[in-house]
Length: 331
Image 1 (cartoon, rainbow, N blue to C red):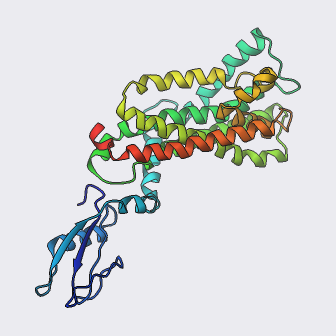
Image 2 (cartoon, helix red, strand yellow):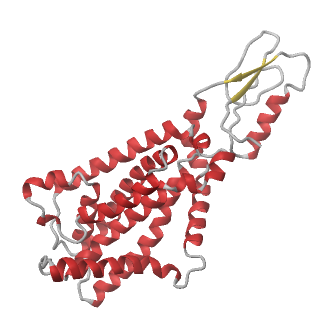
């Protein structure tokens, strides 16, 4: 069994001393090139045949260990191992609510308690206005993307340490671990979304055609969560201090993001700077889509949030890939 991602290649030279680099097993008189990576068993078996040497004649055998090929095939491996991501996500869902009294009801109870606290503090005590829309719906619409982001970020940042046995013993694209943590958070998000829609029906505030934009704003929150989660997951393997920093960042982000208030409460001269928070665009987008456009939506702020989320995602992938080869040693 292969425990790492080596690239092994053997050359069987023919009578003319030629080598053929076509990446496949060919006839005995030609060159045989074989790529062996951690993955399907037929590749592993091929690697063993390559290491055992040729089974014919007195042909010369040369074993070459090449660098760089694994990087070229990495994204192909991510696609080939995609079922592993689904299995990890399902495992996390089952484990999260196993032996709990109310089970998946926690997915509703946690944001519901936050909504009640925000309604009491910001609406009743601070007397913040929500316009013609019930304040509870203003907060509920904002809690959907924020709770998804916060849960995904917390789970993704600890995904490598939580699966140290897998990381240190077998080869697979490590990117699947934080990705599966973010996918798992979509389950809680879907449950909370259904409950929010039921609340809107009860209050007579049904969404209109703008609700079709929800997948786009969900994708924006997904990109922000995965990009930030990749950064924190990699940093968490090097500096265990991030186990204490991440909960603080999540708690701090709840109050600096427009969850308990609308973005228009921020002074106009600071709004562009405020939109550097990628969740500003996602939260404002959810409110706009679910509250029939009664919450303002700035195209400039949405564009800036999209740019920041994309930057986080791309830089997170690059940094994660750069550090990936050291994870097994650091953990």
